[in-house]
Image 1: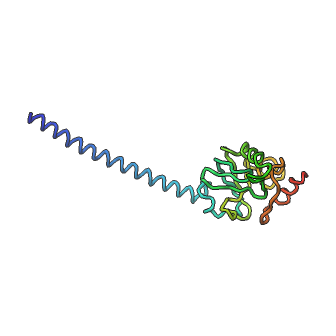
Image 2: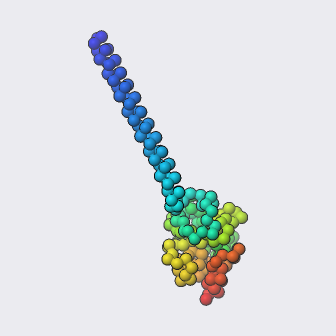
Image 3: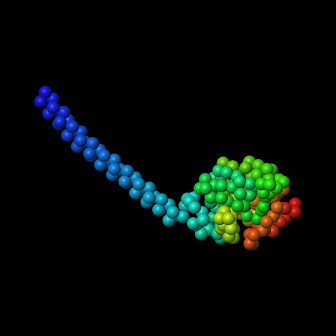
Length: 188
């Protein structure tokens, strides 16, 4: 019986020592993984790679960089929510509100094009509106030339809403596409 007790005690000590080193190894590995992830994230941000965090914290109001984003919810024809939780308001257009005629049609049109889809956001002028929403042009496809009227009419949600009659022009500030949006709304 004493022999069995000694064997059990020796086995316990060996297991305890072995477990101690295994746990120490796991802790070191996890720590290195976390530090490596932080270092990678820091290098990625410093290199200017488009990592979507809070767009409001980035000073991109007059930038021509596009930011890829995914849409999780459409509020109405001109406002939607990103996976980051941020709300986006389309520049230069206004669709009917919930209690106005055409609300359902405009909202359905926008939903059909962008809900659960990847879009490219482009700023122009003020970065956010008075409600804290990001103000953006929304591209359904990354444009070759963001100033080409044909590409704007074909791939920009803001222009498509005007083209199909779901929105009217609403200019705040001096966005670069104001004149083109007026032409689209007039049917030219």
